[in-house]
Amino acid sequence: MSKLYVCSLLYGCPDIAKESIEHLLKSNIQVPTTFFILDNGSPNRAEMDQVLNFANTYSTPHKVETYVNPTNLGVSGGMNCLYRKAFSDPECEWMVYTAHDVATHPDTIQNFVNRAQKGDAHFITGCPVSWEKPISQPCAMEGVGALFMGHFLQTRELYDAIGGWDENFFPAYFEDNDYHCRIIQAGYHKSAIGTCMGPVRHKLSSTINRYPELNKSFSKNSEYFRKKWGGGPAEVMKRLIDEHGKGVPVKHMKEGELLDGIHPQSD
Image (cartoon, rainbow, N blue to C red):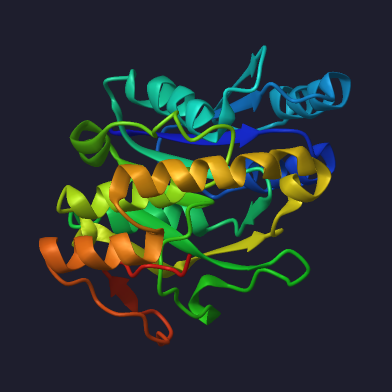
């Protein structure tokens, strides 16, 4: 049976991170699963060690592994560590990524796997609601019109096709837009979908608010993105969709409906 890796990338924010991990470990998953939790060089080492200890001692039928990067490798560098861990296992078919400011419904991850098993979706994102709101049952959630890069399932096929994230985007900003563009460029835009069967709770800008020095990379990374792609994210993604086949435009989805394709967000 194919394996699933559920990976979480942590940087500071121990209270939010612990809640996010607890939601993950409570998930109702019916396939062989390894939870891999990576601390990406957090500055508050003692507090984050307590979070990792919580994960290591949590009672779950699945395997739990934790690791600490001695220094912060940035979002892209951390993401690439997760990919290497998951897809170095030859039995791993899917990797689910969850940011530390995201909390999942117990059925979200298995619903991702159920959708991926149909074989026509290689990047599946959930439906985010604000951290303060409760996570409703999947059948009651509205759908999404664009890819939410804070929580997704990715198949081995897509990883083999386009690889990991560009580590020139350091430490944060625009790395997710870049990966979004590469999905389109490789012709996988129609197999990148948002599903209302994957509700998650998202605490917006939690890391940036606690570590404002990360904002210093915004202009530098924006300039690098424009140099690499010849424009801002919205302009580039629209151009790539025009070149590689139209995606389905953003719309308000009905209960249980899937939106095939992706749509550029604003700059």
